[in-house]
Length: 148
Image (cartoon, rainbow, N blue to C red; front, side, top):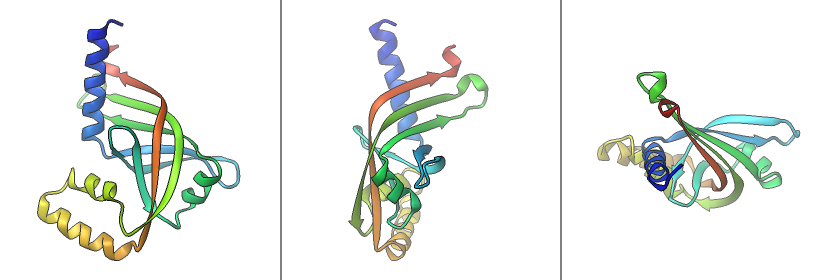
């Protein structure tokens, strides 16, 4: 693959991350068996951020076993339009007071300003604390099904 092809693929992958708010997180549960769960994601440019209740079962599991895989998929009008990003990395869990900024930023991507403001009020009432799960990619693979 020449540099032009690499640059084009990186641009498409960046578009996928900018347009997509959901993915699937694979991790090892407390009982030692694998889990795959749908999650909301926010890409900061250096890490994926998953925000969840500090009492969520994945929080305890990720602290004990931080190695994870993440899949971000964008379908299309046809199979040739489908794109996917697979990532492997380690999760770093931090409990924060209130709502994570990334959770609010992700919501703003799909809501108009008025709806996002109402959503923010509601989630601030719901979550006195949240778990911020940062995942820095150690390995990634982009799939563009239309490219063959």
